[in-house]
Amino acid sequence: MSITLVLVDDQVLFRKGLKELILSFGGMTVPADADNSEELAAMLSKKTVMPDVCIISSPAFMKHNSRDIREMKRKYDKTKILVLGAYPEEFAVTSLYSLKVNGFMLRNSKPAERKKAIIDMQRRGRYWPGFAREVIKTIDPENIPVSDIKPRHQKFL
Image (tube, rainbow, N blue to C red; front, side, top):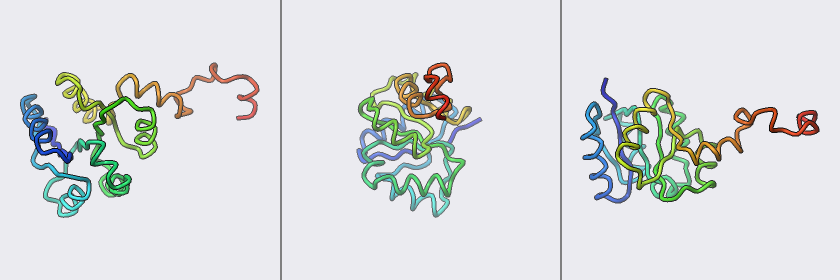
């Protein structure tokens, strides 16, 4: 089974290096890459490639205030989105989770973690590292055990 990926990053050297790393994992193809989410949207609308996973860097993501991401999630709901960020920021995780992005990982992650993230995205439909899961637990009520909610708050809910 081959996993098809598209990379979006405004730094050509990083994008090309990431592509070579991904190809070295085997069982993965990267038929296209883009400078930004606008370029990605144009590529997807032409249906030149339909990726299983799209890896988008946070600068490319933030550049257009996530409108392209929302549109992509609406039009291409089977494509999973993994955002790369520079820092483990709670705000970034919260924003991405609310947009229904499928995962987040740090740009400086080790190759083994990148491979695991891509495989998890394909198999499970998501990848959130430990720090991101902790943030998600605080914002997603389904992830908060009832025992952690005070009785008066349970009554209110």
